[in-house]
Length: 175
Image (cartoon, rainbow, N blue to C red; front, side, top):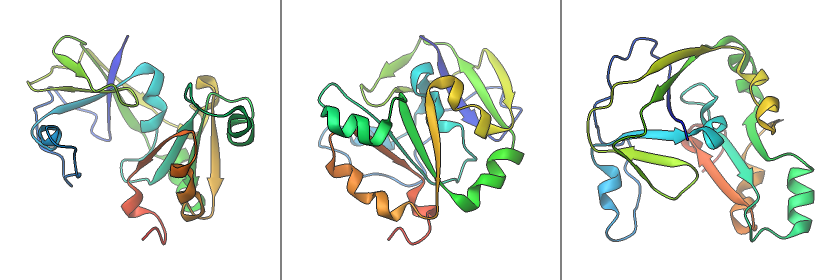
């Protein structure tokens, strides 16, 4: 297993634990997840971060409990789908992001969508620049789907799919 952190900063020498910018409501006993941590994503889920930092997106994939009809309807043969608003498409093709490979030692698996955290300083192993982000999805079996608005997809959280929403506060008419 490989772990990564994505950034728009090309010169990070070390990742220092820091609290999340906007705390989330956490279940009892998990409040520490808003505290100082270094966050990483595993290689199976790295597609979730192949976006400019503030780009809102919804990512879906099937779980073992997903009904076959939903799997066919929403995924149509791909491993996962990533929804992004149309006005972000140009940024996807022009921005460069940096994928930092991180050592797995010191990270704890959150058991949720490939997320891992460390409570100590982490020095990256390597940094890879990634441009033309829209080309990165298909090789991973992920379909990039461009929509006018993410709002009509709110009902996906009531489906049998795994649904992750990232930076939705930046989506058009989300609230």
